View 1 (tube, rainbow, N blue to C red):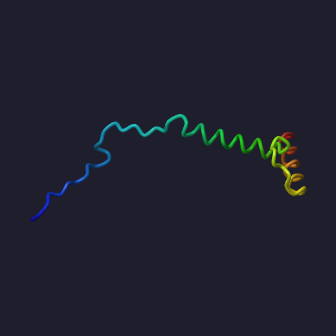
View 2 (cartoon, helix red, strand yellow):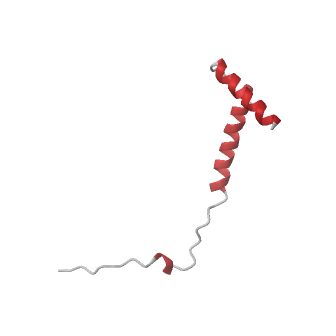
View 3 (tube, rainbow, N blue to C red):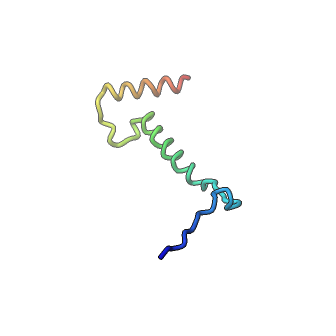
Amino acid sequence: MSAPTHTRPHPASRGGVDTRLPWWALALPTLAFITLLALILNPSDAQAASGDPAVTQLIERVRQLISHG
């Protein structure tokens, strides 16, 4: 007994498929990146910013270089 086989239509034959991303698909990662960048550049705002003094000095130096450039 043989079963009928169904072939899939070619992707181009669907006609008018909208492949745009919703607005939040770009906005949310951008917001997360800006938030994390702000915490890195201004560690005094972070409550748990009690790390290695060398790391803190490096971050402060990077912040100074970015603000002057």
